Image (tube, rainbow, N blue to C red; front, side, top):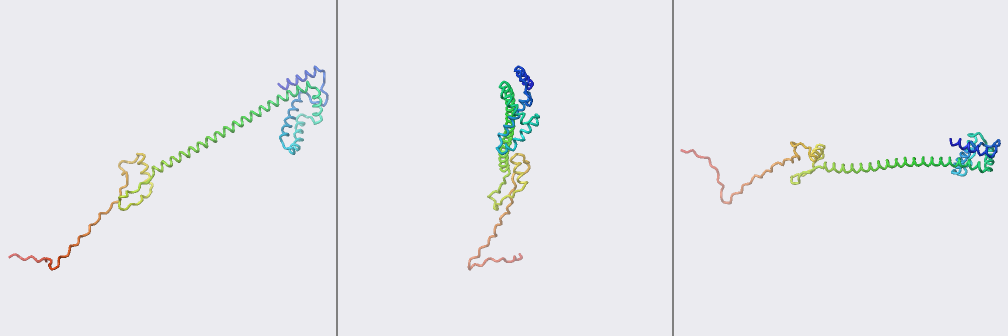
Length: 225
């Protein structure tokens, strides 16, 4: 619709001036599209290194010529024709500038969307990193808590022979159940210490008799008459 209005305005201007477009000159309806592609190609070539721009310049302009069915001579002749008629040239370039501005805004919007998407991904990645750190902290605290729950008691030092209690799964299970108040009441809370055998008292040795005194001797009992 916009191109149609632009073409009508240019045709009205040409008709009011009573001037006919000569042969070999690009029509006012097609000229804004050609100028737009030329400006876009020049912008791409300007952003390239000089050597690369020289290589791709011919390919860029050949693509434009093939797209609109023109050649370099027609482009040069058309630019020369419209540049000598300011009222037509200004109208053509007002359309070109407006379309360039629209493309620029669309490109800027696409860049903003890409930035938002990347920022969203970074936020998700940072949230996952924070969650991982929190999980590591929780796991560390949980490990310390379990380590406290599963400590092994040592025997009483008042026993004669104090040895370290061996670590077994059953002992660790019992300790954890006790702390969590899940231990069976009938089950002994602590393992019974090993029984100590009673000490034997030595047999007393009788003292020897004093010198000069004979120890009494037992005599057989006599029969009573």
